[in-house]
Length: 170
Image 1 (cartoon, rainbow, N blue to C red):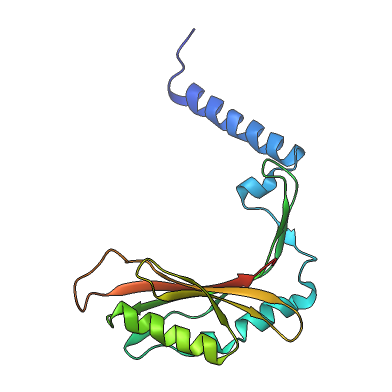
Image 2: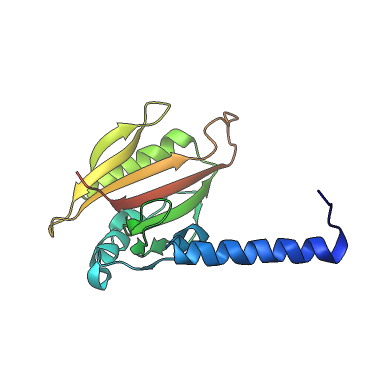
């Protein structure tokens, strides 16, 4: 076997990548490379609008900095290596706070409960961290608050959180 160097090896690598791209597109695996098309699972974006408009995304605990709400539309993945299918709409918001973790979870538990969410689970510390809701339109959703720095136990330490919401099948 001969070892290729320099321009010959680069040309061979580029040819292999081009062949991989053609193979993926012919077999419908473009979703592996980030492809996808609009989904019929949320016509007109109505489900996404309900999730995004939920009051839990309109308030933050005192002393908390919040990033803008990120809304992800429903998409359809063509059949391929993963079997394809629909990705449901979702909404998320990242938060940063030096407040005690317990107070952040308590804030969202009170806010969620006040707006029709029912507690569905606890986090590692026993605090309510996930909720379920059925909207008047029949849309079922799940809300989850995650402490991304749960191992940080220093008093007053900065914690990063993710508040995520998506549709539920049950």
